[in-house]
Image (cartoon, rainbow, N blue to C red):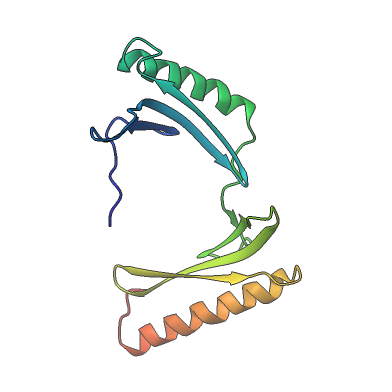
Length: 151
């Protein structure tokens, strides 16, 4: 089931509107940031800020303030300079530890990309990169055998 996107939502600001039949009604804007295992949220209620537009402006002001205070997002880093189609990722686990992956992407046919992640085991980044390289090369060989030259 597809998730409904509220058109009032913005980057790091979610519009919260409970359904009319809910026992308690909540209407407002929630500022939401996630950095690794840490989450920052704050709700700006329409009723506490006079109206919807005042709540939206308060949420925007708080978002801008908070964005300067919290750590910058890590983002995706290339696995190595010559590794086109590969990305190094850290994923936080529920227990707070970090699992590292090499994420590889390749087009197995025109207009269709496939992605696979290879776990970095015992900090052996080279082995994970080689596994990703081999997988990607295998997909490209199969594609060339089919005669799909637009790689």
